Amino acid sequence: MAGNPGDGSGNGDSDDESQSGIVTKTRPKTKKPSLYKVLLLNDDYTPMEFVVHVLERFFSKGREEATRIMLHVHQKGVGICGVYTYEVAETKVTQVMDFARQHQHPLQCTMEKE
Image (cartoon, rainbow, N blue to C red; front, side, top):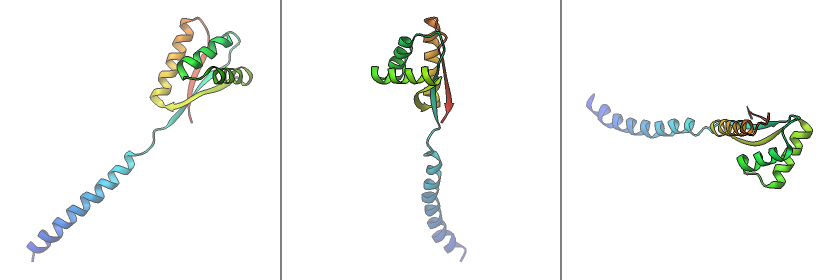
């Protein structure tokens, strides 16, 4: 009696548990990463053409879109350059800030969770 349930149902249960265990373990890992907006802040000193260049170089924007974003930043005080995962957003902020400092501009670039 002890041998039958252990042999028959034990194997069946362990197969069923391993199959359902894989499914439940996989689902939490498919969670999408949080996204972050990279923002440019307006200032009275950074030339507009420099801001357009930054948008083209670091955010792969075309001339027209870069100009539109630059004008939005100029008029509203802040504008979104793009939305990225944390690591990508952090890298872009650092690249823009370093580039602006190298060219002696006070341009500010930040990121915030979307």
